Image (cartoon, rainbow, N blue to C red; front, side, top):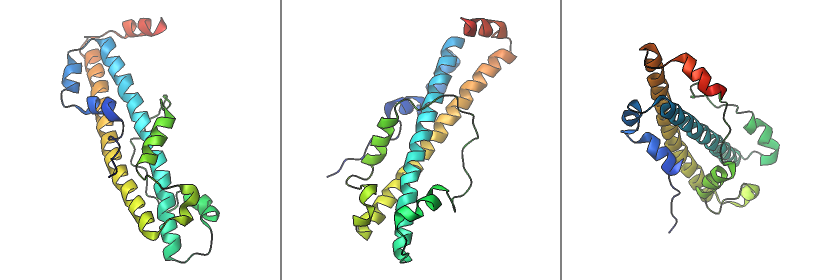
Length: 185
C-alpha cells in the first residue's frame, strides 16, 4: 500500500488556510501582520515553485503518452525543446505577482513531487508501460489541481493581510513614518 504525500505545503500552508487565520491577524500588531504577510508570501513562492516542478513532469509524461499514441518516431529527448517551450499550454492563471522571495527548500519540493509517482524515473520513461505512464500522469494532474487550489487560498490570505495593512494606514491606525523607521533599522 502506498501512502500519499501530505498536501502541498504541509502544515505551514494548512495554518494559513485555517478559517480563523485572518480573523486572528486583524487583532495583531502591525509588526505581526507584516510578519504573517511575509510568511504567506514565502509559502506562496514555495507552492508556485512546486507547481512548476510538477507541471514540468506532467508535460513530459503527457507528451510521452501523445508520442506513443501518434507513433511519433522522434525520441522524447528530441521533443524536449518543444515540451519546454510550453506550446499548447493555455495562459498562466497566476495573479501576476512580482516575487522578491526565493523558494525556501527546493530539494523538499522536488522530493514531494517525486513522491507523487513512486517508481517513475523520467530518465527511463521509455521503459514505463502505457498503463504506468497514464497512471502517473493522472496522479500528477490530480495533485496539480489540489496544489493550485491551495496556492489560490494562500494568495487570498496574502490579499487579506495586505488589505488589513492598507486599512490600518487608511484609517490612521498606522503611520508610514513608523514603518520607514522600522525598515531602516
